[in-house]
Amino acid sequence: MMKKIVCLAAASALMAMGSAFAQGTADKDRDLRKDNRDIREDRKDLRQDRKDVREDRRDIRQDKAELRQDQRELRREVKEGDKAGAAAERREIRRDRADLRRDEKDLRRDRKDVRADKRDLRKDRRERNADKKG
Image 1 (cartoon, rainbow, N blue to C red):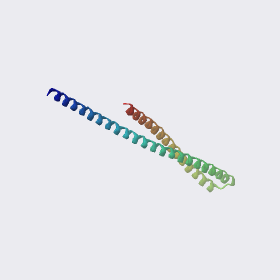
Image 2 (cartoon, rainbow, N blue to C red):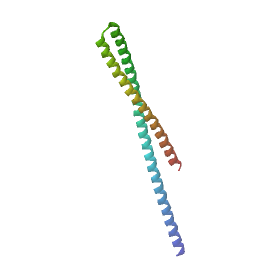
Image 3 (cartoon, one colour):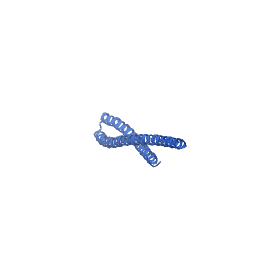
Image 4 (cartoon, rainbow, N blue to C red):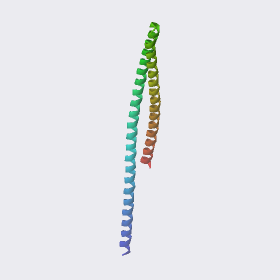
């Protein structure tokens, strides 16, 4: 009789340990899936921010080219003595400079986003690797 009780107790203990082990690995797998999803989202954000940086750089190059063209036209208008044309060119130059400042500000903001996304990606990778080890 005692042998049956000991066997029953041992079987119960083994089942309890197996159940606890299975629950522990399921939680761990769930954490790893969440970490991987976070990493994918961070990569997506990083790609989008890098694309924004490229577009801002292109816009800045175009704005600078337009500004140089307007300055050439202003010099020509002044040389010819056309005051109304020169005034119009000055207004256009002011608008181009304002647009250039907005694009440069946007570029700084996007570069800041890239740095933050890189930092977040590194943090998520460290957490994932710690979860794998632990």
